[in-house]
Image (tube, rainbow, N blue to C red):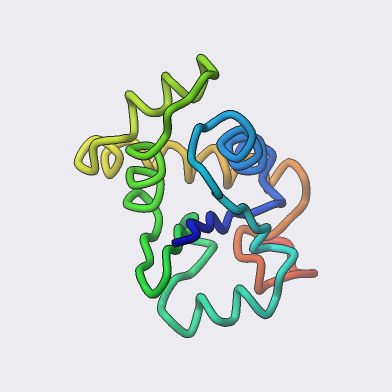
Length: 130
């Protein structure tokens, strides 16, 4: 079954992680999709209670992981040849640890989006958050 990572393409950290995971993560068939750019996909996720503003989403068939759980699940599947991904796998592969560390990722994302003048919530396009 295909594994799909939906991330916020407006965030440079998210984009870098997603592209790296796809290219050198060692997860066969991993697809990445920019949830900020794909309004219809974002609407489908929102209808399932998966708000991209609150974290990345990992999909496999009907199964979905959100936020820290998404990153933990993806990291647990990584077989990286890349040192950065190997480090992230060690830090985030265990769900309890991922839940503790994930707020730092959200903070970095929030700061990066602020610096770029993008709203934290992709559905608030055109509105800059204070």
